[in-house]
Image (cartoon, rainbow, N blue to C red; front, side, top):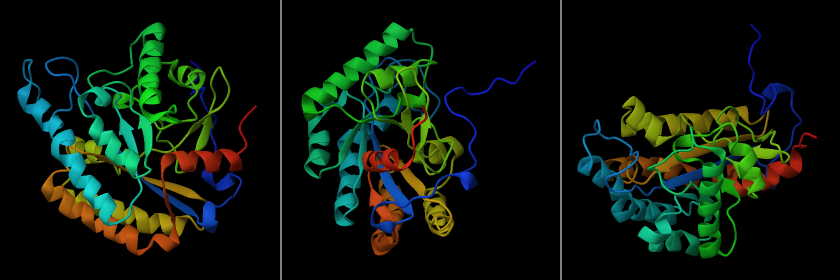
Amino acid sequence: MSLRLNARYQYSAITERADYCWPGEKRLAVYVALNVEQYRFGEGMIEELVPAGAQPDVLNYSWCDYAIRVGVWRILDLLEEFRIPATLLVNSDLYAACPEVIEAFRARGDEIACHGRTNSERQAGMAEADERALIDEATRNIREHEGQAPRGWLGPWISETSATPDLLKAAGYRYLLDWCSDDQPFWLRTTGGPLLAVPYPQELNDSSTIIGRLTSAAEFVGLILDSFEEMLVQSALQPLVMGIALHAHISGQPFRLKQLRRVFTRLDATRQRYWLTRTGSIAEHAAAEVPAPR
């Protein structure tokens, strides 16, 4: 039996790639991605603090809804206090549910990237026509409210079909955050030409680490700080990207905010040593530095 390989990209050792720097001759790019998600009451998928019960699942729904009522505003205050830029990963249904959340980040000049329509659904298993309609609807909604289409996409639940990158490329997306297989941006093959993958973390991610692995808030922040210090060292060898993925209903809880303040304090105090930016800026710079496959 032959080995089935991923056809989207070929193997590439990070030690054997072309070298370049980020703006300002920096070697490490750091970004904060804040997931602000909308869930449909009484239907579809939901993130679980406790095992889901029968619908309506009031406990898990209201825990998730804390994000847009409280958590996002607390995290916004911290971002403002420490002058931290952010990429806002939004379900497009948020424009109907709470447009003022997105308005607050738009006013800061933050990037609005698309996170599908709602986290009550995921793309895996969808027919291609249905997935295309999902992408088109979410993209159109953001374009109508922001005056321009989003450049980046992170799928709800980081879920794809075999056609997802092709559909995103056809819809005009410049980069995709679903793939966590590298510390540098790299090119994916699609039927419409290359599409850039920007690393999005699954370790420095409060959902998969705190909720999935039951890591404490202090331990999670320790992982972020340790990764930051080590990647500063490693970036002498290659330009690197370090993402921090936060969810407003998780990191927006008061006891986790206290720990998150440690991260932002460190980032603020050492910003001359690295490039603190947003995912779209990373994609734009990398696309100019890394030759796209033909």
